[in-house]
Length: 172
Image (cartoon, rainbow, N blue to C red; front, top):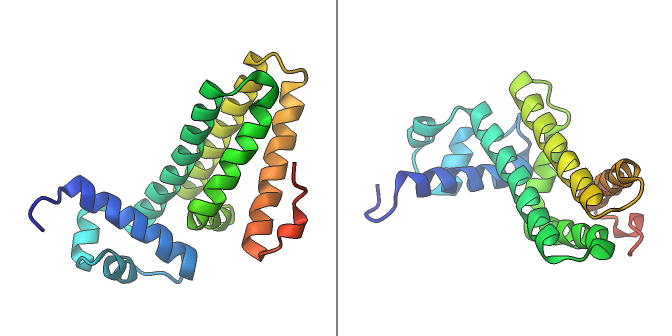
């Protein structure tokens, strides 16, 4: 290992490389050898930390946590009447700065392996619960319906991103 680089750093490098490789090639076509090459490490070193499936799980968990952290910052700094708009802007920023994570989530929605489905369900549920609770705490009427519409627009935003069709989205 390179001096000054911790195993945590390497683990994170592997996850970030996996996001890129899985988004580029698709989970089933991508290999851990490609991930290792992108991370500039050996393939056996990848297996020191992950199987291919656990690597996808870690990449997806990273993407869900990024969304939750961004929404938490919005919740802490935004007035109730601007909360939804703040969540929208935060998500738009994530789609621009971490596009591959969003594309990876979209791919993972179709993967049938139980551990991957569990990560996706947990992530979506955590985001849903967070947004609904934030809307409720802000005193917004019909928080559940607002949450559903917010998530639906987010999914349309993902499709727009994946297909490079920005005209699908109405700007607020």
